[in-house]
Image (cartoon, rainbow over all chains, first blue to last red; front, top):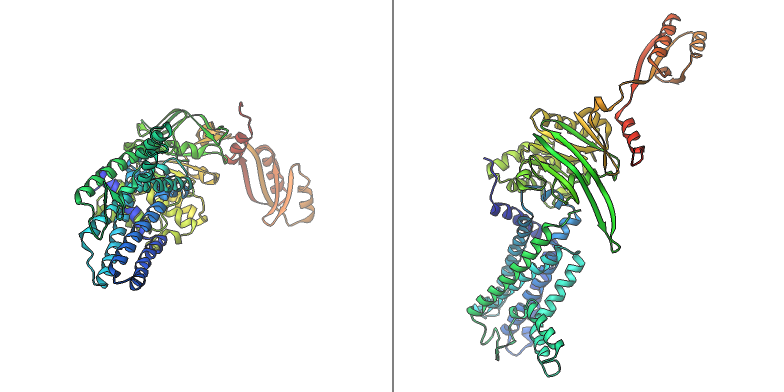
Length: 271
Length: 310
């Protein structure tokens, strides 16, 4: 039977295709293998440490998952729309019976599913490495890995916003720059309110900018100082309550980025 | 009701840092009626693809209106009943044609059984049975064009819009596409297509529109647009006797010796009749008489050669 279908069905059609594209992309696997190789290297570094093998594997493993997920998300995110335009595939998809916003959100959903699956795969690999060294992966590391997924979901939304109106190179530059600034937001805010700049117009401006830009620092907190407490995946780490609040922040920020991307993409001439 | 209606449609592109303006489409108005094959013809850069992109909701008109099946161009309700083949189509090259059609079927809201049934039938209809499981990146240009036709028909559309459907096809492929277009018309569908291959337009179209430099120069049935007067007549003749050949060769007109025989080209039917009587009277043989009328190509060239204000 034929029918007009639902919005969810059309979103899923685009998402499924985006997922297929990503998993058939060899670059993705090469980068994921680098993350696994880093975990393998941590076994060697662990041997050099003084009975801290599990600690080294967890630290390097989590750093590897975070770093390579960001690189892959940046690479795939900025190309998500521009590749459709460059390869002219958009000429056959957009005239199909779907709204432009469904196309855009379907692309986002597909990449979100892909990246979540990738982080889960890398986390399982880390779990295996930790178990191999006789350690326990533990729920603390799961919370840290959940934060990585949330960070990636926000990063893709930011990348999508930029790629809805600019070239992939500029999108990569803007998104990359925002990620670097966002990861150092705490330092930036401290500098803006510090001795030299505190109370000045430049300081206030810098503080406003630091507040408005996405706070990527909130997603990678192991070893950081949170509210005067040093948190670490090995000792006292963040609670599920913190994860939930960060998930709310990521969701709201990503929704705002996607809403803006939808508005920009809706009136764009696809020449 | 017109299936497709365009009124005073204009598109101006503004490009670059200096905001340079290019008028790609300058006030096109036309109607395409249900069940007809309409050929949208014009030289490169005439504005054909820009017009089609506006009809498909890919770009937005600067001025004017375009309605497709009674809905504004780009509306999802209209897109539900339209099948579109872009010029030099590019698809997701990591997919097989079956996966591509499955994806398109999902966008049309078809269930799994219907997607599989239509996909199988269309792959066979466009002659891709042998390559159904191969990724599209391994397809030749002609095969890609066939895959493009299949995806355009996946939604069982009422209106089929084809941008250069014969592009990249060999003569056999072109014939198959011509037959496919005619079968679509037989099924009651409306076909709107643009092409550079005028012979195909002549064979297929009920009506044509000729667009030059963004303006619609002429629109109507070919029989009305083309001048019915005979422009010249070719007479192919032969005679075994050398002296008779010399005598007949002195007749007024343009003589040419070809492998088919001797050819005389005369400017009118009367001059041809006079020469035919002379050949038969001298004991010669007539092999062929070919009257030449204005062709689509002549019309196309004369329209393209006109200035903007003519």
